[in-house]
Length: 334
Image (cartoon, rainbow, N blue to C red; front, top):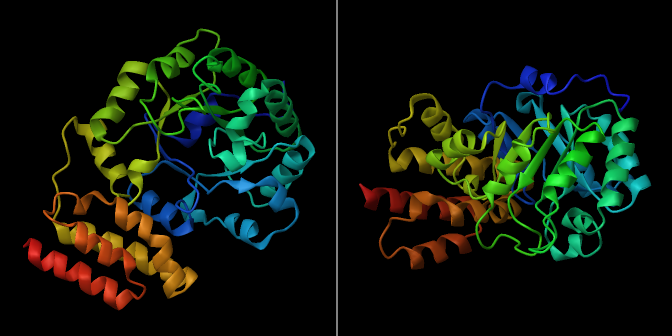
């Protein structure tokens, strides 16, 4: 057992009510202002963008800034990735000094530049090393350690059922499973049956969070009801739609869809997000940082012949010109 004194899974339930919803860590997405926005709509826990352990211990400014957390975001998880045990342990110590509620080890990122170097999902090809790193970090720091990983490296190596037991034995507080292999990237369909197999393994006692393809309140409820997971993590579906957490919470409570609000309401939220980004990064960088949310937002998807307007909107580099286009869309939709 680890030196941590957390009595799990009771530590999990002291942080969360039943059926909690988490915001997944996403690079260039889950910055402090987007996390705060999702939190305001009911996300039970938010994660930072993933942070390179190597860059962190070398005090790279970009990574240092990612460690910034606000008390209004709590409970919050910092997520790190790397392939060297000593580097990961030292990075964990640095993160502990920021006092997050949890520290997550990223063993699931499928990006080639990360996975092929042996970090992220690359650890799925070296489970012994994954276990060694996890165990050492659990022994070193005195905050709850969680892990996010995938089913396995590829279709022929879905090792998650056995791997989950071994990770549990290191003393982690929670395991999040994305229901795809590394080779799938984000294609195909997430295998929730295999996530459920981990959760319903009688030897598992730590909380299991499921992740993958949850884009609606109905799908989220099914994940809880059919597979018995302790939490659900929302990733890409939240981009450009932070209000999704509120809609899910309503459905879980009432088993009915929340009433749709006006187009102007949702547009005002996107505008607020853009202004927050601009206030932190400056006008040009702030708008660039917001483009992914604008492009992905579902509020524009039902507007006929919208593609030319969308292209123009995504080319704008000033708040005034961008908001003028948005206001014109709003006026024409009435």
